[in-house]
Image 1 (cartoon, rainbow, N blue to C red):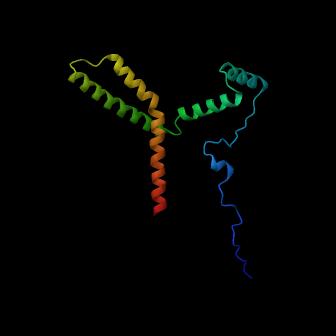
Image 2: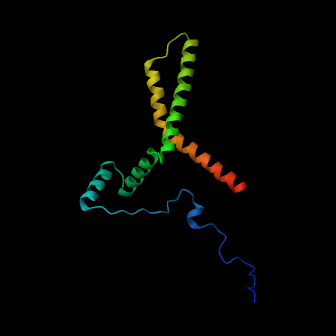
Image 3: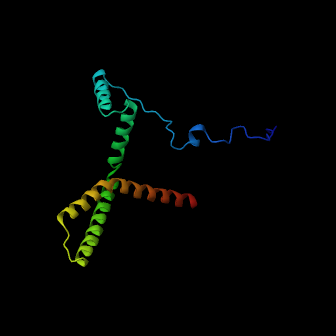
Length: 141
């Protein structure tokens, strides 16, 4: 005996509630702290003027985004920073020479600091884009 087909879907085709608002936070992380640790964390959050949840979220995301997930990401970050630094130094030196001036030491430090500030985010994005393309090409085969 076969199962009769229904003229309507059994499951709703409407997106789930948390999928309709992509920026909506729906997941929870729990941890255990000693009373002393909790007091320390609460005091730090209060000193920054944030709620405990807001401070914990911001701190966790900051740490997750600052540290590379693996050594390849760290290596890619350093290669990106080197490329960024060299290209900007060459460009700045050429511009200074065409203006008849010299590249100032402060300019070099600024370029280095900009490279260091952006390298982990850029490496993470490059790696994520690469992996997404790799997955997509595997699915196409």
